[in-house]
Image 1 (tube, one colour):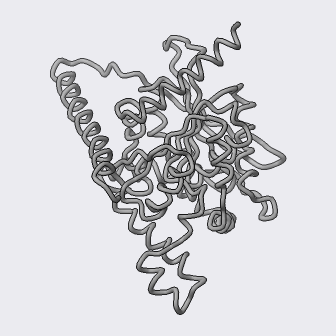
Image 2 (image 1 turned 60 degrees about the horizontal axis):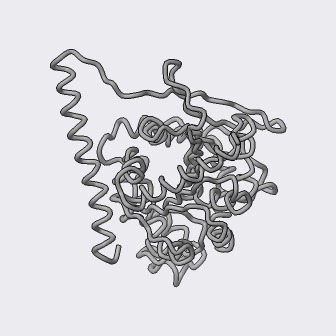
Length: 343
């Protein structure tokens, strides 16, 4: 974080969350005193295990209760997880996107993560991962959709949107690794180890950055967050030897040209970054902003701010100028598509 405007943005989003939490507490207290029940809409999840050439590919998607009015034009969104995560970790966030924005949200777990079988090492590439989105689209009949990508998921989102720009209503890029600046590890650990162990230094620095992110991740509703993270973490431990090559691939990834293609195709993009992200640093956010010409929306938190504060993305889309502009652009793009399909 380098300027007052960035801090102002992050504090504004934090203030929105605080006011919402206070309001929810007041409403809950009032309902308890009067014996009322919560009027908020709810969603449930349907988990799908899809067989792809003998491999299990797991994804989940939100389903609205039977008494919810049918809205065929409801926007689909696919929420792509980061490295060593899975679709279940982002369920709390996706539920809020569904209830507050009315989106139908899909959370895939990419091969080797969250209960999906891994790819063989020789098959592994960012495009091989992104092609699993075609399975989701085919199964659910999705034509146009919003992509949300966090960290590794941001790179997958860029790769997919670059190859299918007309199908993407908008792309929310969050602390992503599509551009290579994050690979330049210049933290204290890297500087100490580089003279003696230059090959080890970047990885050691990355591990120390992840360790610095843990306190932020667990701050707040500790047990609720741990309960949300545990199922995918348990699955990922079993397949860790297959996920290590994915991490090595990310450390040499450069999708700069793909970012440019998405930008030239005029796909609406919103870049959101945690102001205390030590894993994918602010210089990476700056590089992405330079390519796209769109400023970064900053939020309070580290690399995995959306896991610790699952309402933050909805807050950004509903209450910040950048988020509202993106959401409006997505709706206009969706309405144009819907009108064309029904003409």
